[in-house]
Image (cartoon, rainbow over all chains, first blue to last red; front, top):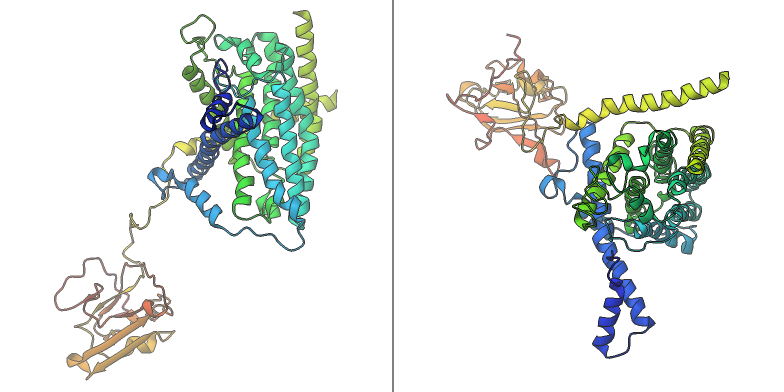
Length: 367
Length: 158
Ligand code: SF4
Ligand code: SF4
């Protein structure tokens, strides 16, 4: 995470490193600096996010089933995820006979990368964004598609029928949910006239009725369905119940990652939670005002205009709320069949998405 | 038109059932979990529980009735003499076999073997679950006028 006003953190590190060895800063030092920043992001965002997400999910799942959830490791079981991580690290990394070795080994990295690279464009708070890309939203959607490649790779190279079935389902699911997901994401982008997540957030500065979800009554007609659409398609993209068909543990053992063990399995496990969180974050940016609070204190010229911790607080509150609803849905709805997923995506979500987009375009045209 | 109506109804029902499902599951988050934290919290055992035996060694007359009736032959008694002067050397119950049927309590002429409330029977080897009730250090063995600290339900037919 880099404060946008200051020169990128990585160039500081590059300069410092160059001074240390007494050389002019060149591209090599820049590369090292960028790597250090990436490592810091990985350490400060990815690890707590992934581990916290896993803990939250298990705890809530427990409570929803009248259990207590993890409570043995550390106070309230808070260190459970950490203990699981250590366990995964200590486990044997198995490469089964008949697997396509390079693909099999590379697939988890691809999934991991794709899921966590999405955090780069998220505006956590005013000025607190790693890269404010002009095409931030597009980049984010592209990464979701990239993750699928990793999953198909894993399923295909495992030489296992469950894995292959999981990968096939993933493909069937992707071609169904990508369209509504894209259409739903288009609505706010069209309304704001930008694909930059920062621009979309700042467009919603002000009190709660400035949020894109219900900016005014006509917009709400287009945006509320788009919001539900994005949320639902996002569930499918994160492979969460009721759309967890590619892993479907009760039918396919573990779906595409059946054959993975140890940390390679962890590399499939953590991104799922990262994906949930980044999708929740993008949903809150697109429809719920991102880092702007509901009373309008962060609007330009107001008390908390540009105060990063205030923005961070609201960003995380909204994201966490959406994240919790995702968990609640998982423990409420049964898994649906693959043909039902396709029915839902093509026959329900797609028409609604088209209608929303059309309405948004019309409203934009009319002013 | 009909098809559109059905479609709209299906969408509405989907949203509605999801909502109903959530209103059922979410309140559970705020309820107390039922889980008993076992080693720290001991569940309340009803007095009729047929757990590990409770043995009153002074009353036993080494008549071997309990060993004879046991359907799985898991009681081994070794004693010097018989009757009231008998000295019990070993009174072993092999809990890897015992099926907690309480049949051994029925024929006992002196009513000295009971089913107790204890249920935690764990061991790393099979020998560890053979309990010798002639061992007076065993907290489940009572002698003389010692009061058994829990309610004992008689399974005796007499
Ligand atoms: S409870 Fe039944 S099985 Fe166990 S020792 Fe008594 S008679 Fe034998
Ligand atoms: S039946 Fe009763 S008295 Fe006879 S040996 Fe068994 S415990 Fe002792």
